[in-house]
Image (spheres, rainbow, N blue to C red):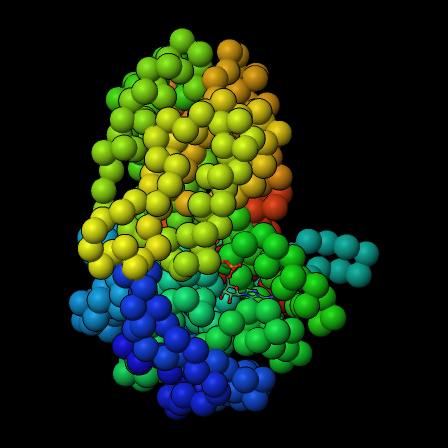
Amino acid sequence: MKAEHYVGGVFRSDGPAFPLVAPVDGTELGAVPEATREVVDDAVAAARSALKGPWGAMSAEERATALRRVADGIQARSEEFVDAEVADTGRPRAFAETVDVPRAVGNFRAYADLLYGRPERAYTTRVPGWSSGTGEALNYTVRRPLGVVAVVSPWNLPLLLSTWKIAPALACGNTVVAKPSEETPSTATLLARVIDDAGLPGGVFNLVHGHGPGAAGEFLTGHPGVDAIAFTGESATGAAIMRNAADHVTPVSFELGGKNPALVFADADLDDAVDGTVRSSFTHSGQICLCTERVYVERPVFEEFVARLGERARALDGYGPMISAGHRDKVLSYFRLARQEGATVVAGGGAPRFGDARDGGFHVEPTVLTGLPETARTVREEIFGPVCHVAPFDTEDEALALANDSPYGLAATVWTRDLSRAHRVAPRVETGIVWVNCWNLRDLRTPFGGVKASGIGREGGEYSLDFFSEPVNVCVQI
Ligand code: NAD
């Protein structure tokens, strides 16, 4: 898939090119155009002008129908989307087939559903008037689009996470300028093709490729013509974007990094807890923001849990490479740091050798660590690789204190068969999402987001519609 910008309904490839590298074996997949400031300016101008065109005049139902056409278009080209996502990320094909592409289709359908047939409920709230000294008045609230929305997304779930924001932004009547990660430009380009084929007016959706700092990402998020920024990525990048957006007081919705805890109580079903932790720590080689990197296990089952998790980690195969040589080196540097900090390496701790083309790729071993103090950098900093540290605890309060002692607050998992404990503990975990006896079970209507350094705001269902539209109160004196 040749990466191209899509600006004002036209595909173009201007700007210097940079290479796209396959993480599975290090080969070059093609060249990606780097958007200059001029390309970004053109994209923002096209998006602003499209607000005044037919898109701005469409009813919610008409927009819902357009979103459904996009969903159908992704579905119809799902093989191409799977090929592109697998090539860019090196992830297992089954993951792209069962997660990335269905969720992208689901993102467009879910927001079409929210609008279609019930625009009143999704879009307008009427409240009865009340008497005051000046007489009776009727107040009602309408929601109007924010305007031009910048969507900046990461490489770990490229299509899933960009459509998670693009779909509700469009549903609310905004226009969009999207900038995918420089590491994974291909499915975004295919999405632009689908949107073009679906007949959305030129300028409603725009796509620019390129890097972040000092480049397309920074040009876009600091642009005076951008009315809101929806960003997913590292917390430090979120902070940089906030500084950049501050001059224009641009509203932001941020989904950022995590250092997610799992709490395993001695009364848990240990088979489920081990299975669940294998998934939550190692799926996509730990490159999901929701992955578990800190596991706290009640002391009576600690030894057994560590032994079983280590055995399972050593037997794992095929969760895919790190996204890039740079990220592989970062993850390996944390493995070295963990040893320096005094960790016991229960499983993994290095880079595998395959004896085939994959040795040119960016693979690391699923890794289980124990024995580190809570102050260790390995326990405090997000690594974003297939690694977790397991530590024992003795009481429920201690488990909660350990889980909450983190600058991050994205997601947590609690493993217990005690119903009272589950309901007692879950609300006290300082994260935006708490799973009980499961992990990454997602209903797109529920609020999704993090606390502390893990984000600002919530998205999902009506929560997204709240962010991507502006309530305007109309007060009529009767
Ligand atoms: P990243 O922050 O490096 O990059 C994300 C995007 O921001 C890319 O498109 C990049 O080009 C752009 N960018 C980088 N610097 C920028 C700048 N100064 N101005 C504007 N744009 C800039 O993140 P990544 O490495 O691509 O993704 C991994 C990170 O994303 C991890 O920290 C992970 O936890 C986080 N993440 C969070 C969620 C969530 O829902 N909370 C989901 C997925 C990933």
